[in-house]
Image 1 (cartoon, rainbow, N blue to C red):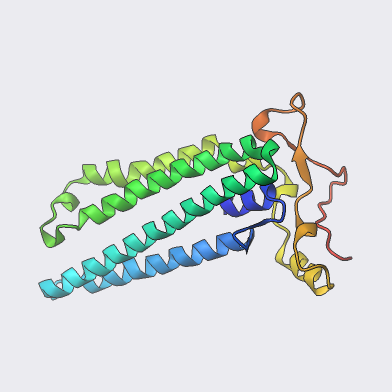
Image 2: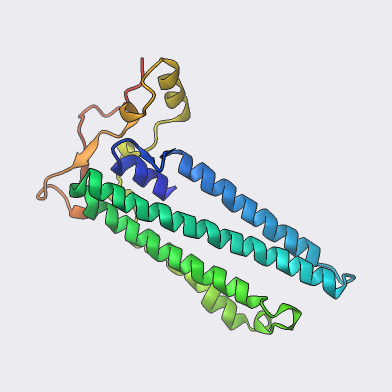
Amino acid sequence: MVMGRMVYNFTSQARLLGIKAWRFTLYFVLLDILAFIIQAGGASIASGNDKSKRIILLGLHVYMGGVGFQEFFVLIFAYIAFRFSQQIKQENPSRLSQALILLYAEYAVLVLITVRIVFRLVEYSSGLDSTIPNHEAYQYVFDTLPMFLALVVFNVVHPGRVMPGKESDFPGRKERKNYFRAGSPGDSSDLLPTIQPAGPASMPEEIAFQPKRQDPTPSYGCAQ
């Protein structure tokens, strides 16, 4: 969700790698659900007292495959974040410093998520002989703590401080649909947010945005 809003607010066409900004959340949520289903399927296969060792190991391998699948998506996301930074450097270098504040926070969260995923892979890498599940300390340090720190990072570098106000929100689905039905151009440039960096003396750098318009009702260029 944060990456999609960054693409929407910081790129000139609200697109990255040919994908519209508001599609990023949908795609990654679907991929995450897919990884969760695989993990749940593996856990279901391995659960039960009447299962043979071969079936339990099969379930563990399916579960670990789902976890590895999740890490694959994290790497894809890291690549998208890198391409985003490259695109901002080319299109609008003046806003790069503001985008990097939140982008670095996302990189930190990706590292924390990766620590958790690697731990979950190592946890059952020895199969049924693993002793890691028997020690709660490992769970707290390598599973719970990284997710807690990820929450702290996004509270310290809150996306709402970097992209404040209604002007930074996606146009609604109905608004986008009406816009394209009206026979508007194929690109989405008229749906872009009308925000720009404010002067250095007007507000802190990390929240240096303000609407171009004074009208309190946001408009994204849709046909009336």
